[in-house]
Length: 329
Image (cartoon, rainbow, N blue to C red):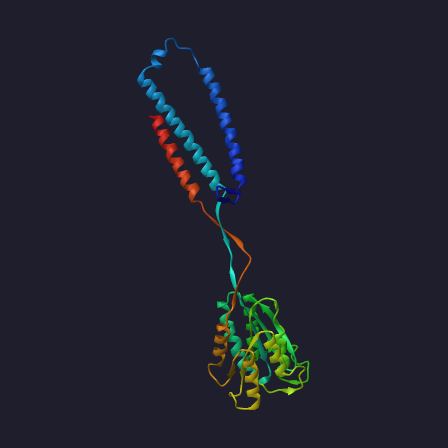
């Protein structure tokens, strides 16, 4: 319910209180009428008294005081009712969220464990600063497995990244983390891993900043379903930037050159793991990618606002006390 632009949490209090006040006023009026009828008596030659200036002035003051007392009592009671109904301020909030999606894509072959653990730990510390970004995690070796899909449930993400960190640092209680990554033949099937990550982005009809953080030892052993260059072309076609982290120095071997060309072809960047600032560089590059701000659904925010009824009740109380004291005098 809205009362003169003021929302009330319990509007029924006002209606019920008003009804009771009307009934009480009617009962008092009937009682006073009966008493006045019983107490009335004819007085001879009273006009001489009522015509006196002092009498008229006293009667006028009496009526003014009674009017002040009645109006102040009504104001005090009405303000008390409105206060009891919990007046609220209503604000329409139109929040905006950042439409940035980040998929961590980790090669979990033996040589990558320490790097993966560091990368996971770094992203775990960043989650507290995210506002609307979605994170997902895919791991791969001879086959790829989704640990968790893109989500902005940061409590869930923190828990999953914590489990990933424990598994990657060798905690045997978390061996189940690697389930689903040994279903193929060979190791480090890079193309399959990258293609799975690129295909994990949803909401393809919306404009969003999409990034893959791709960490691999880049040593393919086996026959993937999708070659890494085909996976790179898929990323480029879908507008996904790939940020590659590779053990080899830039240009040190042909595999490193191919990896660099693939990730830079998507608009991403290539980092050598020997670079001490590689992981931080990836994080900075991903965060520097412009994220589109999107409007979320509007929502109404309510906050208590008792200022008006308290002020009116104070005025009414002052009027009641003042009028009563003068009447008593």
